[in-house]
Length: 167
Image 1 (cartoon, rainbow, N blue to C red):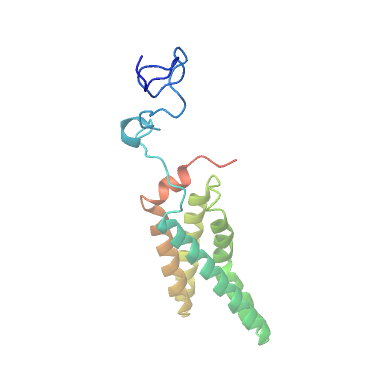
Image 2 (image 1 turned 180 degrees about the horizontal axis):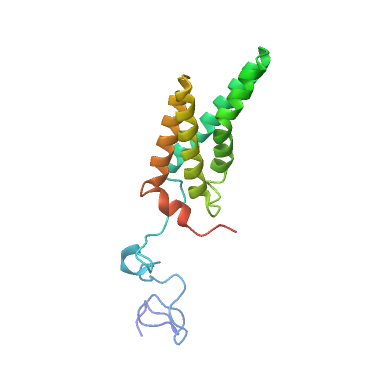
């Protein structure tokens, strides 16, 4: 027995006492959580935990439009223009519902993406109706609604909403 080897230890120099297998600190092969280079069954790749930029942009647009609608209503009420406040509320109601829908994006609630796309489509319709009445604010509402539909329909947004729901 050489002077470097202790009695009862294996010959590899990295295991535990003879007959007990390798020590817990022994070098292990690299851990591969998914076979085939990270692809899980079904061909999908593991999802990152950060919200994609397209989904975040759609969420921010819903927040901005809801906030602008609320600000417009408050200003109309403060200046005692109740008819204008009612008109702003009717025009901004899809943005208000969209704001509530956007709050569900981080939680991955079932149907969040489809609901948000439908609400953004309503924003487009209301924007076109408002534009038809000669109010230029309809152009903004329709443009933002179109942008949200495009952002949520992109390839990067689909996997975010398709992940399993967190407990």
